[in-house]
Length: 180
Ligand SMILES: Cc1cc2nc3c(=O)[nH]c(=O)nc-3n(C[C@H](O)[C@H](O)[C@H](O)COP(=O)(O)O)c2cc1C
Image (cartoon, rainbow, N blue to C red; front, side):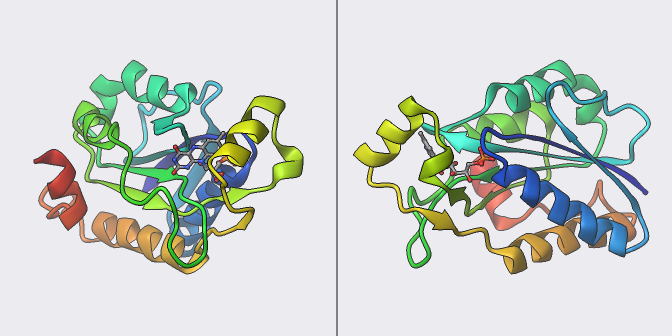
């Protein structure tokens, strides 16, 4: 199986998530290619796609949402999984829940699922405006990426592909919820 993984990031943490997903998929004997959406190659010729973005002010970064938009026709014919990297904090990551935009993104390409994964924040690396916002919302600093959750999710993708039943795979409870 050939899997294309596309992501958008401002400060790099989403790239780390994309690489971890690729590593799991490769570890199961598939071909996984990771590209930053700036811009990424078209999804034609791939068996599946995984697209994700760091979340800022409740939205995906433009290069990722524009990638879905630009390639919606091809992506709609492939099994696609989406992920957003955002909430910060170890105990009770905030903001909780999916961005409002998630349902629309899922619908735009008929994605199998949308998952929210905790992110990372290094104040020293932020631009001035972002640092100000982070201070105002009291965003916790640290790397809260949950590698086990990321790898579990990636194994789920590989399992769906290996089952060869991707078109019949029941979406996750969350995907059902965001589609409803
Ligand atoms: C200015 C700013 C706004 C943010 N807004 C959100 C948000 O609305 N929702 C969310 O879940 N995370 C938000 N975050 C957290 C980021 O999504 C998180 O740090 C993520 O790991 C960043 O990804 P990146 O390093 O790939 O750019 C925000 C972070 C900053 C600095």
